[in-house]
Image 1 (tube, rainbow over the protein chains, first blue to last red):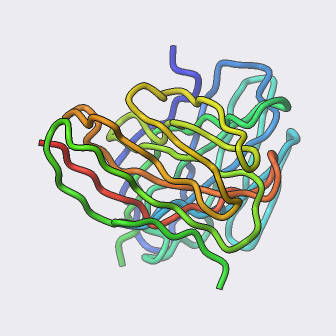
Image 2 (cartoon, each protein chain N blue to C red):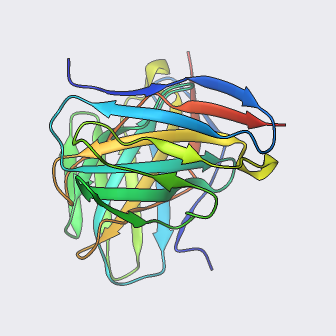
Length: 111
Length: 112
């Protein structure tokens, strides 16, 4: 079993839809959870960073962490064509410097 | 502008010909990393550095070398590239171990 699993998609939604992106992980030592967005031909950029169970909101984006289920989600409200990108989850422990990345989910928001 | 730069952005080479991919950051960050990104496998860490002259292996270090002689630079060296090192490479830097990573624009390497 991979340490971090993520549905690779592609996922296509109409503009304005609510998007749900998910990752599961196997190691209960993971304590830090990040979501990165990667546009085509660009490096990843950080969207959300959380280290506790529950929800964290930033504008149209909400990150949700359920440590008991080892499951994290990113919700995008009122999705826009500019949200079309690959979304990567990254998970880390509270020791060491090694964050494990999921393979990414490719999202297309159609106008 | 705060940024991580990589050069070259694209490189086609042949098996066995030594190459270096440069990485530089202007944010005075302590930590720097190299990743490779392959379809279906995501980003995998090759090497990381916690400070000048301090480096350690990541998940996939075989066939790669790094050095950190200055804080701002972290070159990736392939002494004898092979076709299985064909990939998209990213350099990243961060202020501290639990801080956001800033990624460079990527280097697409093809080894024939």
